[in-house]
Image 1 (cartoon, rainbow, N blue to C red):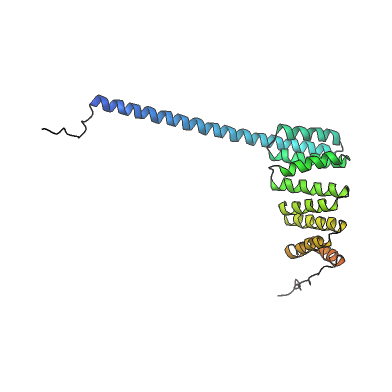
Image 2 (cartoon, rainbow, N blue to C red):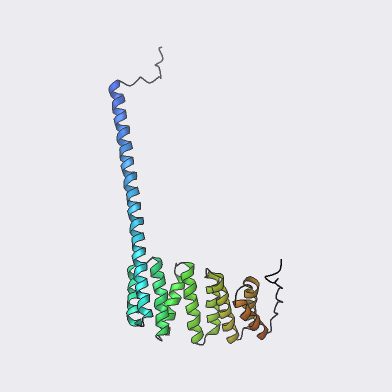
Length: 228
């Protein structure tokens, strides 16, 4: 019995051209799809950037309105920015600034509610730090020093700059003292002295630490500018 050969027969010339045509068509479709996707991404990124730039410009105008003394109009503009440009850095800053204006206008409860909702959301650390700082001040004014101290501590943890962290820690210590929690106050003052001893806030921390019975570290001797 003759065994059939398993070697595939060569394609005819017409079959080769058909294979090439199908392969070229597949590559063309894939290339077009990739191009469309790239264009879509570029359009989205460009649109988002323009949105953020325009939102920032609107925020600047609203803040200028507030500085000019027209708080009701500024509050209206800030609320519109927060709604229209939601998800942008300017919208986050608008919400925080709006809460600040409400506090200035004596609308403490709405401001506290808005700030508490804001800090629970997904926002940049610097915006949440500002919100926690305002919340701490509002709670302190309401006679809730322990809650205020916690808000200030959260602000210190999130603040992007050392001098802000140090200041929020001083605020937290002050609120803790008002709430009768001198141990927390001493811990806050100690953190300022240990981490931010070169900043201006350390001078106040030294004075306040002594007032609450904490250990004040000795100042390190510094060489004079004329020393070699």
